Image: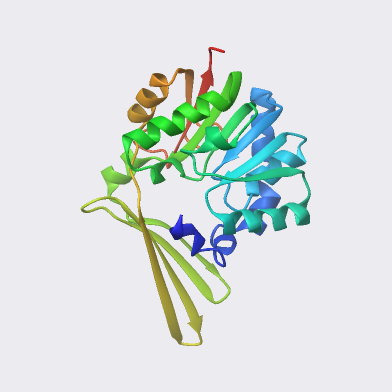
Length: 248
């Protein structure tokens, strides 16, 4: 949590919030049309981009995040861009104790699952997801394709410059997978930098399948991005996994 709390003033610029709020609604609209859900729980919602877009489309939406600072910014965005969203402070592992209704869908996107580092926590998270879904409910998980990342050993996740600030996101692979954000602030030819790092676990498709099936999820589908491109484990940059809650 501390990793993202410390990014409060940079997160929206680093993730290009203002650009994406204009372009990603059409992407989510296709999800609504394809899977026909009327309510959504946006888990690890950050500053609320996807929660707000879903709410703008008339989907009853709750945005959940572990960071109080992120949720404060999400609430500000909600007032600015419209769409009624309920904001909830919770970790993924504590979700069931904080959520007191069921949803047609859960979206956990933005490479959030790799922040869960141990099997008991992942088991608890997926159990919580299952329990807060309506029967037949849809689970959507998006993460980076770590098979490709480890095969290519490509350390760079992304580089983005916003005026005088540059954001360089990169990996260290040894001894464990570490995600780093180097923030470089330029003043003429002089620069100041700040490095923030957090450990991730590089889940592969087979691992997620196994843990989700253990909790009762079925009817898996796989895409290479949020626009439903086919998933290719050797070439896709992302893994987008969907599954259904079949039993009551």
